[in-house]
Image (cartoon, rainbow, N blue to C red; front, side):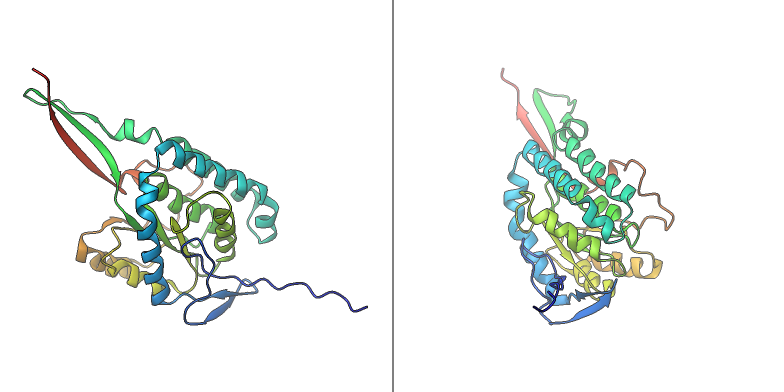
Amino acid sequence: MSERVAVRKTYKLFIGGKFPRSESGRSYLVQSANVALASRKDARDAVVAARAAGKGWSGATAYNRGQILYRIAEMLEGRREQFVALGVPAAEVDAAVDRWVWYAGWSDKLPQVYGGANPVAGPYFNLSAPEPTGVVAAVAPGSPALLGLVSVIAPAIVTGNTVVVATSESAPLAAVTLAEVLATSDLPGGVVNLLTGAIGETVPTLAAHLDVNALDLAGIADPALATDLEAKAAENLKRVLRPLPPDHDWTTTPALTRMTTLLETKTVWHPKAP
């Protein structure tokens, strides 16, 4: 009998809830694995998938979105040892699980904090309520690969947005493994889309894309590139979360601005009964 040969894993993109290869057929060797090298066409396909998922996801109740984020935390904790085997420190996996739970808890509380009744001079009710911006393009930090990725995805989707993320170019395995967690956690396809490969190829396409509504530059370390991306984002007045300092501590409790920047405010006037 011959010795069994182990199945070699193929690391693909995550677009529309599926795991396609890059349309270009390209891959690159990183972390001792062949990983899909996303193209500009893949980035455009991811935006299409995110837009298609937007109506259903934004229309879900805040409570339901919180349940799904909590389910992601459960699934991630169940795969803890798999992430550790990929080189992600156990403490980082635990912090990523806790980060999902933290954002899940905000799902039905943020509207109370960020919205409310406004005082007006006249016989009217004036109410403000937050609504999702739409499709968010984000750049995940290179380190910490898992916690940083979770920290850009969770605030975008808990507020009802859909997201396209350019993952860490140098450490993508945590991201593509997280995609497997997302695919089995009740998250509708297209709410989160992950692109592996060269940030310099996919992110300018996302920044200039007219169907992207917001841009999170958390993982951009080059100030000149950040400036160029912001200029591209200005074409359709995207909301922009600017790059964080290179020494940013991702283990600290996030500011609420990571959620509120990705929200619009709808204000409704209603006459009072005489």
